[in-house]
Amino acid sequence: MTRKSSSVTIREVAKKAGVSIATVSRYINQTATVSPEVACRLDEVMAELNYVPHTAARNLATQKTNAIGLMLTYNIYGDFFAPMLRGIEEVVAEAGYNLLISSNLSRYGSNHNPALGPNNTDGILGYADSLTEAGLNQYFHSKFPVVLIYRSSPPHLSIPSVTVENKAASKAIVDHLIEVHHRQRIIFLRGPEHQEDSYWRELGYRASLEAHNIPYDAELVWPGEFEREIA
Image 1 (cartoon, rainbow, N blue to C red):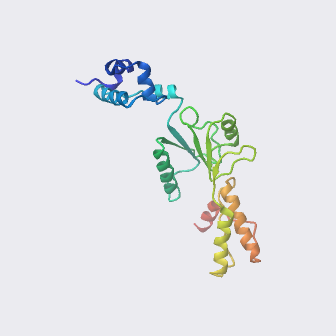
Image 2: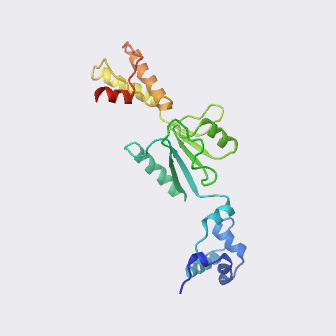
Image 3: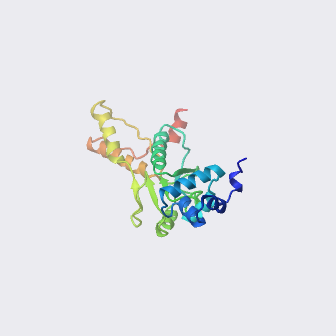
């Protein structure tokens, strides 16, 4: 009868395979190469004994979690997030990592104690304002890998980021409404006040109106207020 994996030790694997404990550890943790013959024998023995490496112990040995964290600010359900998540998951999986997601529903980067970080991931993807600037400072100076999504790096940190050219895109959309559909009264629904995307999209909107000599009304309607007005 095969024993439970939790009761099988690395010492037993080493003994049955006829190698040292250090060799088994190096093979499991991939800290050094072993010969193809030894690797094959270890695979056979671990399968026979139903041995599964203890994840926490392996992480301690390698100082890696094989996980990437994705910090989100908002509810992840909707047409926008699905393609983004699929793309991130595909790349992460291809690299042999797991993806851990934390959705912070209290907006504007107010998550001072993020659920994801150096204790359980090898790096963080920070969406929009999911991380405070103080948190970014801490990660940067501790040399913990961070990539920002839909947010530029604070100038003094130089953190890699993936953004969209929001100003040019917004201007092109408004140009189309004016030049093709001959619209003159165009409402701009501004996004969250503290979000970078909102800022650049509004600049694109203003630039188009100014280019076509259309007066700009500074009293823009926020999405929530607009919904209440038409309800």
